[in-house]
Length: 420
Image 1 (spheres, rainbow, N blue to C red):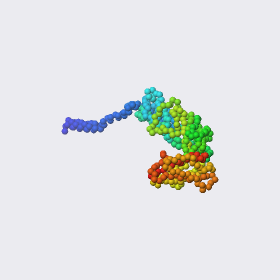
Image 2: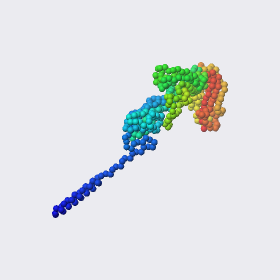
Image 3: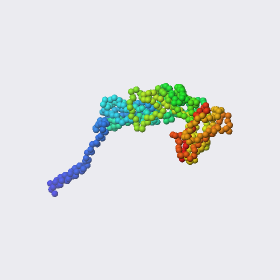
Image 4: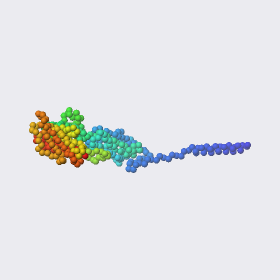
Protein backbone atom coordinates (compact mmCIF):
# COMPACT_ATOMS: atom_id res chain seq x y z
CA UNK A 1 0.00 0.00 0.00
CA UNK A 2 1.43 3.35 -1.01
CA UNK A 3 1.65 6.41 1.17
CA UNK A 4 -1.28 8.17 -0.53
CA UNK A 5 -3.67 5.30 0.23
CA UNK A 6 -2.65 5.15 3.88
CA UNK A 7 -3.20 8.85 4.27
CA UNK A 8 -6.67 8.59 2.74
CA UNK A 9 -7.67 5.76 5.11
CA UNK A 10 -6.47 7.69 8.19
CA UNK A 11 -8.44 10.77 7.09
CA UNK A 12 -11.61 8.68 6.65
CA UNK A 13 -11.30 7.14 10.13
CA UNK A 14 -10.84 10.56 11.72
CA UNK A 15 -13.91 11.88 9.91
CA UNK A 16 -16.08 8.95 11.03
CA UNK A 17 -14.92 9.32 14.66
CA UNK A 18 -15.76 13.02 14.59
CA UNK A 19 -19.20 12.29 13.24
CA UNK A 20 -19.93 9.78 16.04
CA UNK A 21 -18.69 12.18 18.72
CA UNK A 22 -20.78 15.02 17.38
CA UNK A 23 -23.84 12.75 17.28
CA UNK A 24 -23.40 11.73 20.91
CA UNK A 25 -22.93 15.33 22.03
CA UNK A 26 -26.16 16.46 20.39
CA UNK A 27 -28.05 13.61 22.04
CA UNK A 28 -26.95 14.71 25.58
CA UNK A 29 -28.25 18.30 25.23
CA UNK A 30 -31.58 18.78 27.19
CA UNK A 31 -34.23 21.17 25.91
CA UNK A 32 -34.55 24.42 27.97
CA UNK A 33 -37.26 24.16 30.72
CA UNK A 34 -40.15 26.62 30.30
CA UNK A 35 -40.20 29.56 32.77
CA UNK A 36 -42.49 28.89 35.77
CA UNK A 37 -45.91 30.46 35.33
CA UNK A 38 -46.61 33.31 37.76
CA UNK A 39 -49.69 32.64 39.89
CA UNK A 40 -52.53 34.97 39.00
CA UNK A 41 -53.53 37.54 41.61
CA UNK A 42 -57.17 37.13 42.69
CA UNK A 43 -59.41 39.81 41.30
CA UNK A 44 -59.66 42.92 43.45
CA UNK A 45 -56.56 42.14 45.55
CA UNK A 46 -53.14 43.83 45.48
CA UNK A 47 -51.18 42.70 42.41
CA UNK A 48 -47.95 40.79 42.97
CA UNK A 49 -44.92 41.55 40.82
CA UNK A 50 -43.97 38.64 38.52
CA UNK A 51 -40.23 39.26 38.88
CA UNK A 52 -39.56 41.14 42.10
CA UNK A 53 -38.10 42.76 44.10
CA UNK A 54 -40.83 42.18 46.69
CA UNK A 55 -42.12 43.78 49.88
CA UNK A 56 -42.12 41.79 53.14
CA UNK A 57 -45.11 42.07 55.49
CA UNK A 58 -44.30 41.37 59.15
CA UNK A 59 -46.65 41.31 62.20
CA UNK A 60 -44.83 40.26 65.36
CA UNK A 61 -47.93 39.23 67.34
CA UNK A 62 -50.99 38.52 65.16
CA UNK A 63 -53.06 37.30 68.17
CA UNK A 64 -54.13 39.47 71.12
CA UNK A 65 -56.11 38.36 74.18
CA UNK A 66 -58.31 40.98 75.88
CA UNK A 67 -58.78 38.77 78.92
CA UNK A 68 -62.09 39.42 80.70
CA UNK A 69 -64.40 42.13 79.40
CA UNK A 70 -68.02 43.13 79.97
CA UNK A 71 -70.98 42.60 77.71
CA UNK A 72 -71.58 45.90 75.91
CA UNK A 73 -68.04 47.12 76.53
CA UNK A 74 -65.95 48.10 73.48
CA UNK A 75 -62.23 47.33 73.58
CA UNK A 76 -59.63 47.88 70.86
CA UNK A 77 -56.10 46.71 70.08
CA UNK A 78 -53.57 48.08 67.59
CA UNK A 79 -51.57 45.57 65.56
CA UNK A 80 -48.34 46.88 63.98
CA UNK A 81 -47.75 45.82 60.38
CA UNK A 82 -44.22 46.59 59.11
CA UNK A 83 -42.73 46.45 55.63
CA UNK A 84 -39.27 44.89 55.82
CA UNK A 85 -39.01 44.45 52.05
CA UNK A 86 -37.34 46.43 49.26
CA UNK A 87 -40.42 47.97 47.60
CA UNK A 88 -43.68 49.52 48.87
CA UNK A 89 -46.16 47.16 50.52
CA UNK A 90 -49.76 47.47 49.35
CA UNK A 91 -52.34 46.72 52.03
CA UNK A 92 -56.04 46.03 51.60
CA UNK A 93 -58.71 45.12 54.18
CA UNK A 94 -60.45 41.80 53.57
CA UNK A 95 -63.17 39.88 55.39
CA UNK A 96 -63.67 40.67 59.08
CA UNK A 97 -65.95 39.53 61.93
CA UNK A 98 -65.33 42.68 63.94
CA UNK A 99 -64.63 46.35 63.38
CA UNK A 100 -61.27 46.77 61.59
CA UNK A 101 -59.65 50.15 60.95
CA UNK A 102 -56.47 50.83 58.98
CA UNK A 103 -54.42 53.86 60.00
CA UNK A 104 -54.12 56.62 57.44
CA UNK A 105 -51.61 55.98 54.66
CA UNK A 106 -51.03 57.22 51.13
CA UNK A 107 -52.85 55.06 48.57
CA UNK A 108 -52.77 52.06 50.92
CA UNK A 109 -48.99 51.84 50.53
CA UNK A 110 -46.39 51.23 53.25
CA UNK A 111 -42.89 52.34 52.28
CA UNK A 112 -39.91 50.03 52.93
CA UNK A 113 -38.91 50.25 56.58
CA UNK A 114 -42.20 51.94 57.56
CA UNK A 115 -45.16 50.51 59.50
CA UNK A 116 -48.90 51.10 59.99
CA UNK A 117 -51.41 50.46 62.76
CA UNK A 118 -54.37 48.16 62.24
CA UNK A 119 -57.00 48.58 64.96
CA UNK A 120 -59.48 45.80 65.78
CA UNK A 121 -62.46 46.63 68.02
CA UNK A 122 -64.98 44.23 69.55
CA UNK A 123 -68.17 44.77 71.56
CA UNK A 124 -69.59 41.47 72.93
CA UNK A 125 -73.37 41.32 73.05
CA UNK A 126 -73.79 38.27 75.29
CA UNK A 127 -71.73 36.36 77.87
CA UNK A 128 -69.20 33.99 76.31
CA UNK A 129 -66.59 31.79 77.97
CA UNK A 130 -64.40 32.36 74.94
CA UNK A 131 -64.82 34.60 71.93
CA UNK A 132 -62.56 34.94 68.92
CA UNK A 133 -62.76 37.49 66.12
CA UNK A 134 -60.66 37.73 62.97
CA UNK A 135 -59.72 40.32 60.37
CA UNK A 136 -58.02 39.41 57.08
CA UNK A 137 -55.46 41.75 55.47
CA UNK A 138 -54.48 41.25 51.82
CA UNK A 139 -51.01 42.33 50.63
CA UNK A 140 -48.74 42.20 47.56
CA UNK A 141 -46.14 40.16 49.48
CA UNK A 142 -46.06 36.78 47.68
CA UNK A 143 -45.10 35.06 50.95
CA UNK A 144 -47.92 36.70 52.95
CA UNK A 145 -50.76 37.42 50.57
CA UNK A 146 -53.23 36.98 53.45
CA UNK A 147 -52.52 38.00 57.04
CA UNK A 148 -54.94 36.87 59.77
CA UNK A 149 -55.22 39.18 62.78
CA UNK A 150 -57.10 37.76 65.76
CA UNK A 151 -58.54 39.04 69.03
CA UNK A 152 -59.96 36.80 71.73
CA UNK A 153 -61.09 36.86 75.34
CA UNK A 154 -63.95 36.20 77.74
CA UNK A 155 -67.19 38.20 78.03
CA UNK A 156 -69.14 38.43 81.28
CA UNK A 157 -72.27 40.31 82.26
CA UNK A 158 -71.47 43.89 83.19
CA UNK A 159 -73.44 43.50 86.42
CA UNK A 160 -73.34 40.35 88.55
CA UNK A 161 -75.98 39.30 91.06
CA UNK A 162 -76.43 36.91 93.92
CA UNK A 163 -78.46 34.00 92.61
CA UNK A 164 -77.57 34.70 89.00
CA UNK A 165 -78.56 31.66 86.91
CA UNK A 166 -77.83 31.81 83.17
CA UNK A 167 -78.07 35.58 83.18
CA UNK A 168 -81.29 35.80 85.20
CA UNK A 169 -81.07 36.65 88.95
CA UNK A 170 -83.57 34.75 91.05
CA UNK A 171 -83.89 35.26 94.80
CA UNK A 172 -85.86 32.96 97.13
CA UNK A 173 -87.48 34.27 100.30
CA UNK A 174 -87.83 32.15 103.45
CA UNK A 175 -91.18 30.40 103.89
CA UNK A 176 -93.85 32.72 105.31
CA UNK A 177 -95.44 30.63 108.05
CA UNK A 178 -96.47 33.44 110.42
CA UNK A 179 -97.59 37.04 110.12
CA UNK A 180 -94.02 38.31 110.55
CA UNK A 181 -92.32 39.75 107.43
CA UNK A 182 -89.54 37.68 105.85
CA UNK A 183 -86.54 38.99 103.92
CA UNK A 184 -83.61 38.01 101.73
CA UNK A 185 -80.47 40.08 101.14
CA UNK A 186 -78.59 39.73 97.88
CA UNK A 187 -75.84 41.64 96.12
CA UNK A 188 -75.50 43.53 92.84
CA UNK A 189 -71.92 44.40 91.81
CA UNK A 190 -69.45 44.87 88.96
CA UNK A 191 -65.71 44.50 88.43
CA UNK A 192 -65.72 46.60 85.25
CA UNK A 193 -67.04 49.98 86.46
CA UNK A 194 -65.36 52.19 89.03
CA UNK A 195 -68.76 53.30 90.26
CA UNK A 196 -72.48 53.31 89.48
CA UNK A 197 -75.61 54.46 91.28
CA UNK A 198 -78.95 52.80 91.99
CA UNK A 199 -81.57 55.44 91.18
CA UNK A 200 -84.46 53.45 92.61
CA UNK A 201 -86.12 50.03 92.89
CA UNK A 202 -89.70 49.33 91.80
CA UNK A 203 -91.74 46.33 92.96
CA UNK A 204 -94.46 44.42 91.10
CA UNK A 205 -96.28 43.72 94.40
CA UNK A 206 -97.41 46.11 97.11
CA UNK A 207 -96.39 43.70 99.85
CA UNK A 208 -92.85 43.33 98.43
CA UNK A 209 -90.52 46.18 99.35
CA UNK A 210 -86.76 46.69 99.29
CA UNK A 211 -83.88 48.79 100.56
CA UNK A 212 -80.24 48.99 99.51
CA UNK A 213 -76.84 50.23 100.67
CA UNK A 214 -73.28 50.25 99.23
CA UNK A 215 -71.11 47.18 99.79
CA UNK A 216 -68.26 47.57 102.27
CA UNK A 217 -64.63 47.24 101.19
CA UNK A 218 -64.53 43.75 102.68
CA UNK A 219 -67.74 42.71 100.87
CA UNK A 220 -66.36 44.04 97.57
CA UNK A 221 -63.22 41.99 98.07
CA UNK A 222 -65.28 38.84 98.70
CA UNK A 223 -67.03 39.14 95.33
CA UNK A 224 -64.00 40.53 93.44
CA UNK A 225 -65.80 43.76 92.51
CA UNK A 226 -64.97 47.46 92.22
CA UNK A 227 -68.36 48.67 93.42
CA UNK A 228 -71.77 47.31 94.28
CA UNK A 229 -74.75 47.29 96.64
CA UNK A 230 -76.61 44.94 98.94
CA UNK A 231 -80.36 44.82 98.34
CA UNK A 232 -82.79 43.52 100.95
CA UNK A 233 -86.11 42.21 99.61
CA UNK A 234 -88.85 42.22 102.27
CA UNK A 235 -92.22 40.47 101.96
CA UNK A 236 -95.26 41.10 104.20
CA UNK A 237 -97.34 37.89 104.55
CA UNK A 238 -100.52 39.94 105.05
CA UNK A 239 -100.25 41.08 101.43
CA UNK A 240 -99.80 37.61 99.91
CA UNK A 241 -102.31 34.84 99.24
CA UNK A 242 -101.47 31.36 100.43
CA UNK A 243 -99.21 29.34 98.18
CA UNK A 244 -96.17 30.04 96.05
CA UNK A 245 -95.50 33.30 94.24
CA UNK A 246 -92.97 35.00 92.00
CA UNK A 247 -92.70 38.78 91.85
CA UNK A 248 -90.19 41.26 90.40
CA UNK A 249 -87.90 43.97 91.64
CA UNK A 250 -86.81 46.37 88.89
CA UNK A 251 -83.51 48.05 89.72
CA UNK A 252 -82.92 51.39 87.98
CA UNK A 253 -79.29 52.50 87.61
CA UNK A 254 -77.33 55.35 86.03
CA UNK A 255 -75.32 52.93 83.88
CA UNK A 256 -75.53 54.03 80.23
CA UNK A 257 -76.78 51.50 77.75
CA UNK A 258 -73.88 52.18 75.38
CA UNK A 259 -70.51 51.59 76.99
CA UNK A 260 -68.54 52.31 73.81
CA UNK A 261 -65.98 55.12 74.11
CA UNK A 262 -66.97 58.45 72.47
CA UNK A 263 -66.60 58.39 68.71
CA UNK A 264 -66.95 54.61 68.37
CA UNK A 265 -70.71 54.41 67.87
CA UNK A 266 -70.53 52.49 64.62
CA UNK A 267 -72.25 49.39 63.39
CA UNK A 268 -70.46 46.14 64.20
CA UNK A 269 -70.60 42.95 62.21
CA UNK A 270 -71.28 39.87 64.30
CA UNK A 271 -70.71 36.22 63.42
CA UNK A 272 -73.67 34.06 62.55
CA UNK A 273 -75.38 32.58 65.59
CA UNK A 274 -74.33 35.42 67.89
CA UNK A 275 -76.82 35.71 70.76
CA UNK A 276 -78.31 39.16 71.31
CA UNK A 277 -80.61 38.25 74.23
CA UNK A 278 -80.23 39.68 77.72
CA UNK A 279 -82.49 37.74 80.08
CA UNK A 280 -82.22 40.03 83.06
CA UNK A 281 -81.33 43.36 81.48
CA UNK A 282 -83.87 45.75 80.01
CA UNK A 283 -82.98 49.14 78.54
CA UNK A 284 -83.81 51.53 75.76
CA UNK A 285 -80.85 52.25 73.46
CA UNK A 286 -78.99 55.25 74.75
CA UNK A 287 -80.82 55.30 78.10
CA UNK A 288 -79.81 54.11 81.57
CA UNK A 289 -79.93 50.41 82.29
CA UNK A 290 -82.48 48.65 84.45
CA UNK A 291 -82.19 45.11 85.84
CA UNK A 292 -85.00 42.76 86.86
CA UNK A 293 -84.67 40.42 89.85
CA UNK A 294 -87.18 37.58 90.17
CA UNK A 295 -88.24 37.13 93.81
CA UNK A 296 -90.10 33.94 94.73
CA UNK A 297 -91.46 32.55 97.96
CA UNK A 298 -94.11 30.37 99.59
CA UNK A 299 -96.80 31.60 101.94
CA UNK A 300 -98.01 28.70 104.03
CA UNK A 301 -99.49 30.96 106.70
CA UNK A 302 -101.54 29.28 109.40
CA UNK A 303 -102.73 26.57 106.99
CA UNK A 304 -101.04 23.22 106.38
CA UNK A 305 -102.53 20.63 104.05
CA UNK A 306 -101.53 16.95 104.18
CA UNK A 307 -102.66 14.70 101.30
CA UNK A 308 -103.65 11.05 101.51
CA UNK A 309 -101.53 8.28 100.04
CA UNK A 310 -101.35 8.26 96.25
CA UNK A 311 -102.19 11.93 95.81
CA UNK A 312 -99.52 14.47 94.80
CA UNK A 313 -99.62 17.79 96.63
CA UNK A 314 -97.30 20.76 96.06
CA UNK A 315 -97.60 23.24 98.96
CA UNK A 316 -95.64 25.94 97.10
CA UNK A 317 -97.86 26.03 94.03
CA UNK A 318 -100.95 24.80 95.95
CA UNK A 319 -101.46 22.22 93.19
CA UNK A 320 -103.27 18.95 93.86
CA UNK A 321 -102.62 16.29 91.19
CA UNK A 322 -105.22 13.51 91.15
CA UNK A 323 -103.44 11.66 88.34
CA UNK A 324 -105.23 9.51 85.75
CA UNK A 325 -108.38 7.48 86.42
CA UNK A 326 -111.32 5.98 84.48
CA UNK A 327 -114.06 8.54 83.81
CA UNK A 328 -116.64 5.84 84.44
CA UNK A 329 -115.38 5.31 88.02
CA UNK A 330 -114.57 8.92 88.96
CA UNK A 331 -112.29 9.67 91.91
CA UNK A 332 -112.62 10.87 95.51
CA UNK A 333 -109.74 12.11 97.70
CA UNK A 334 -109.53 13.17 101.32
CA UNK A 335 -107.10 15.85 102.58
CA UNK A 336 -106.26 16.83 106.13
CA UNK A 337 -106.01 20.59 106.75
CA UNK A 338 -104.50 21.90 109.99
CA UNK A 339 -105.32 25.46 111.01
CA UNK A 340 -103.49 27.71 113.49
CA UNK A 341 -103.77 31.33 114.60
CA UNK A 342 -107.41 31.41 115.67
CA UNK A 343 -109.60 29.94 118.37
CA UNK A 344 -112.75 30.34 116.32
CA UNK A 345 -113.81 27.49 114.00
CA UNK A 346 -112.85 28.07 110.37
CA UNK A 347 -115.84 29.03 108.27
CA UNK A 348 -116.23 29.35 104.52
CA UNK A 349 -117.64 32.79 103.75
CA UNK A 350 -117.75 32.23 100.00
CA UNK A 351 -116.47 29.69 97.52
CA UNK A 352 -115.76 29.38 93.80
CA UNK A 353 -115.49 25.92 92.25
CA UNK A 354 -114.50 25.34 88.63
CA UNK A 355 -115.60 23.30 86.77
CA UNK A 356 -118.94 23.18 88.51
CA UNK A 357 -119.20 19.37 88.40
CA UNK A 358 -116.45 19.12 91.05
CA UNK A 359 -117.79 18.23 94.49
CA UNK A 360 -116.16 19.83 97.54
CA UNK A 361 -116.86 19.50 101.25
CA UNK A 362 -115.04 20.75 104.39
CA UNK A 363 -115.76 19.20 107.79
CA UNK A 364 -114.22 19.96 111.20
CA UNK A 365 -112.68 17.02 113.10
CA UNK A 366 -114.10 17.50 116.60
CA UNK A 367 -112.14 14.50 117.89
CA UNK A 368 -108.77 16.15 117.12
CA UNK A 369 -107.25 17.47 120.37
CA UNK A 370 -104.71 20.32 120.30
CA UNK A 371 -104.31 23.63 122.12
CA UNK A 372 -102.90 25.43 119.09
CA UNK A 373 -104.39 23.68 116.03
CA UNK A 374 -107.67 22.62 114.52
CA UNK A 375 -108.08 19.79 111.99
CA UNK A 376 -110.44 19.81 109.06
CA UNK A 377 -111.23 17.11 106.54
CA UNK A 378 -111.38 18.26 102.92
CA UNK A 379 -113.25 15.98 100.55
CA UNK A 380 -112.87 16.49 96.79
CA UNK A 381 -114.63 14.30 94.22
CA UNK A 382 -114.87 13.93 90.47
CA UNK A 383 -118.24 12.19 89.98
CA UNK A 384 -118.46 8.85 88.19
CA UNK A 385 -120.05 8.40 84.77
CA UNK A 386 -118.62 11.73 83.53
CA UNK A 387 -117.31 12.27 80.02
CA UNK A 388 -113.49 12.01 79.72
CA UNK A 389 -111.80 15.32 80.48
CA UNK A 390 -108.31 16.65 81.24
CA UNK A 391 -107.14 19.56 83.38
CA UNK A 392 -103.43 20.36 83.23
CA UNK A 393 -100.98 23.20 83.70
CA UNK A 394 -102.72 25.56 81.32
CA UNK A 395 -106.32 24.91 82.37
CA UNK A 396 -106.32 23.77 86.00
CA UNK A 397 -109.51 23.19 87.89
CA UNK A 398 -109.77 25.12 91.15
CA UNK A 399 -111.44 25.41 94.52
CA UNK A 400 -111.20 28.99 95.83
CA UNK A 401 -112.35 29.61 99.38
CA UNK A 402 -113.00 32.87 101.23
CA UNK A 403 -112.72 32.27 104.99
CA UNK A 404 -113.17 34.07 108.31
CA UNK A 405 -109.52 33.49 109.31
CA UNK A 406 -107.74 36.86 109.75
CA UNK A 407 -104.49 35.51 108.28
CA UNK A 408 -105.95 33.11 105.69
CA UNK A 409 -108.80 35.04 104.14
CA UNK A 410 -108.28 33.29 100.83
CA UNK A 411 -107.35 29.64 100.19
CA UNK A 412 -107.09 28.41 96.60
CA UNK A 413 -106.48 24.81 95.59
CA UNK A 414 -105.39 24.26 91.97
CA UNK A 415 -106.31 20.82 90.66
CA UNK A 416 -104.97 18.63 87.85
CA UNK A 417 -106.34 15.29 86.63
CA UNK A 418 -107.08 13.24 83.53
CA UNK A 419 -110.20 11.09 83.34
CA UNK A 420 -110.12 8.52 80.54
